[in-house]
Length: 331
Image (cartoon, rainbow, N blue to C red; front, side, top):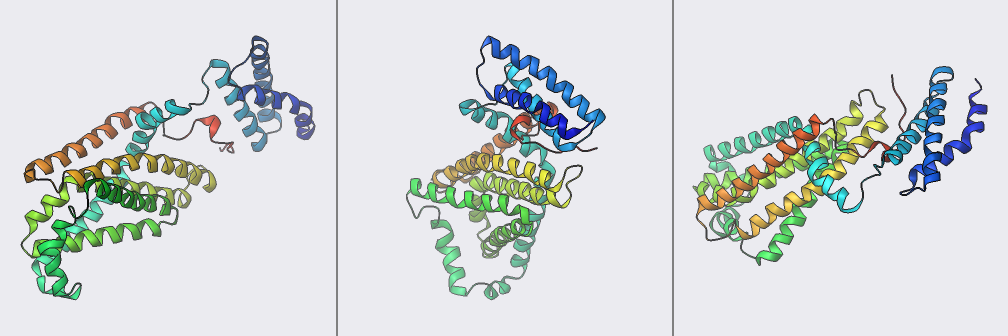
């Protein structure tokens, strides 16, 4: 079969199917025409695959059939508020759940490094002066760490914390394509937590440190570790693409990272509100930590329940097939 001649002969039919599949509403005549064209193009695809296998043409026809099928059965792409609801209840938790191994590994390594720094500085308090001058250490322990959370009005402080943490998470996500970028964000974050915590613990203020860092820190660090894990997985997508091409693998991971950026912005908004209104409040320490623990448990439950449901349904959190663009078939 002469493939070029075949394409030229049926190009008009394929364009017409593409046009009908893109419409939201069809008249009765157009619906009948759509079904007839769908059958014809399905036959064309079978002929191409059997007599002149060409991956580009086959991918194009597959995309046309997917769009035509969606239009015929009344399942157009999700838009507007429905898309937002699907992102919150399906796509975001599914993506986060699918990357739980990356997230747990990232959290374990960074927490272990922070704890090691705390223990080291507690055992060797004389080493602290090599990092910070004595007057700055005294100011941090006696006033700066505690007053940081109440120095500004709660509303403006919440906005500041939210934007700052969202920027850190975005950098961890989108620098993942380089791998080194996400690792550098993690190193900076862990070093800061380990140093400040080590100074507070070595100075005998461990209760104050954990009482102020845990209420918001549990959810905040979970979001940062999740962003970093998805960023690292994005970088790994082009290192080890599997059965896909590197471009296709990276595109899929990038689309999922974009969904997670929006979802984690919401998570960090909650942690920012806790940091601004709960952490510096006059509530007992156990109550403040309890509120943070409830928020953390709520997020984990949300991801596990909805994410597991999405994975069991065979979903990935990626765009619908007709919205991804054509991909070359692989064997």
